[in-house]
Amino acid sequence: MIGQTSKLRDLKAISPWQRLLVLTMATFTIAPFAPLIIQSLAFRWAWPNILPTVWWHEQRERSPFPLAWDYVFSPSSRVGEATLNTLGIGIAVTLLCLLICLPAARVLAQRNFRGKNQLEFLIALPLLLPEAAIGIALLMIFIALGLAGTYAGVIVVHLIPTIPYMVRMLTAVYQGHGTDAEDHARVLGANRRQIFFRVTLPMILPGVIAGCLFTFLVSTNLFLLTFFIGQGQIITLPTLLFAKISGGALDATGAGIALIASIPGIILLIFTDRFIRNYPLAE
Image (cartoon, rainbow, N blue to C red; front, top):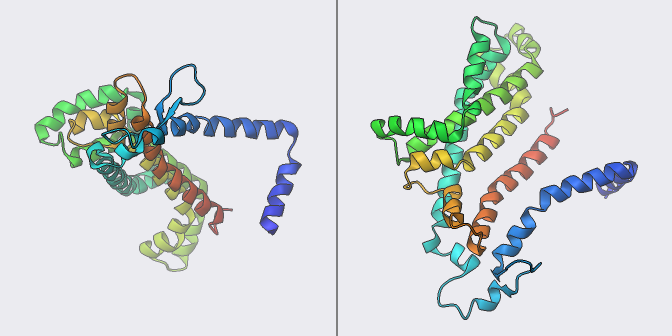
């Protein structure tokens, strides 16, 4: 009750222009989901009608085949397979990316060595290149290595655009905390393992969680690299969605898949935000 009262006071304390800005930001954030939700429930929705003229539930009993959400949740849609693949690949990429980037970011943040600037540029280089160019260039190599059309190949290729993001975020986290606490623990007799798990990790954990969230979101939304390396054998939600809308129109099935694809990111974002806000060392 006290928390709700304080929130109301905070809202009343801001100026009308700030309220308008917050309302505008919320509108731009939520607005894209409204047409998707309506489209996923529509059977016929044509311009210039503001709302569908025929809804999905009105045609459910008349249609001999599943429509809209009935089709999305049917085995023939392959949405279940695509969802499991998307989540599995995203989790694997996030864990591998964390194992690679955690020590690399520490070195970049706390050490000065010859060629450091050039190394940072090379790490960020995949972000400067078109995704299609990377996919086409790697396709030949992956075919020769037998990784094309495999889960391992898709996971490896997802590391290319996600590692630069994770390295940059963790480097900033390490730079923000410095090494004073670690030096004090070392003076008090703590070994490397104790320093990392009892001193370093608790300090950088919010940044690590945020980096993992961002990496997972990037991986689960990659289309071109998954399309090229997956060779149509590895189905994810982005590739399945593209197949549904490749005809040029977004029907109820495509809208439903788009909504399902957004659910994991929204859930993770909510939990991550609450974790960071309530974390003892967040302040």
